[in-house]
Image 1 (cartoon, rainbow, N blue to C red):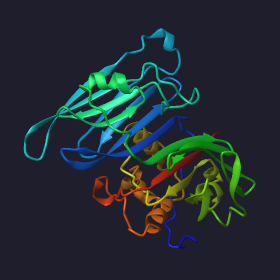
Image 2 (image 1 turned 120 degrees about the horizontal axis):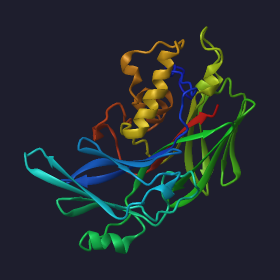
Image 3 (image 1 turned 30 degrees about the horizontal axis):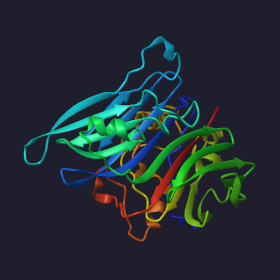
Image 4 (image 1 turned 90 degrees about the vertical axis):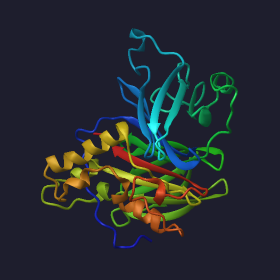
Length: 338
């Protein structure tokens, strides 16, 4: 089980939490023959829909997609592009070119932030295609001088889900897609994969952190949970508000555990949530630096890293601390609705 030396996480209230469908996908690519992590953060609220593309230590750009509501009031954009000029280590001016078309993109359901089909995204470095995503291969090839890449390996996914007692996500383990549901009710935690119960954790007030192995179609998956915010009722100023905080869950296959820093709308959402603790006079003191959305402060991520034989650390925003030699991890932030 999890060591008792875990630090107590900062409590979070969702009193002012905006319900936002948000998912971050993390890939590894080559830029100037050097490996780096590329993160795509898809964000959707009632009135907005955006994509933030971030390459560690190189660039960050946010693309505003068509509005999720009242879209008939505006013209939806067609194929688009963006040029970014950078000065690299040897003082040579380098050109990054981004192409995308999400005009006809299809989604799993109306609230989904990330498209499933009918789209493409491409990144070129000095004219060389280094990253592409989506199923419109022919249209993409026309814009990239016929260059084609195989689908990039998805290293990690970080998703924020909302619910009262049940939280649902989707993940792909070794090429196979699955629906994952986490039910938390009456002090019992249930994990379901494709509608079948894979794990039941009872007496959650005592087992608010832990890890277990589950099997998904014969694939071994390490499941790690931390619902301290949901069961903790200590503190003179708490008044049981922690039950509205967030739980954290990791599904890990192989090594996994690649977690670059949060950027764009995800960073703003977490900063606002953590700031509400300080403003509300929570019982857990917070230093000014603790408002950073860095994931390294979370006990569940510490456990995930310590359980890895390679002992990787995610305490830096750079890629020097992260490995990428196989595996996949899904990290869920589960927020309780008011």
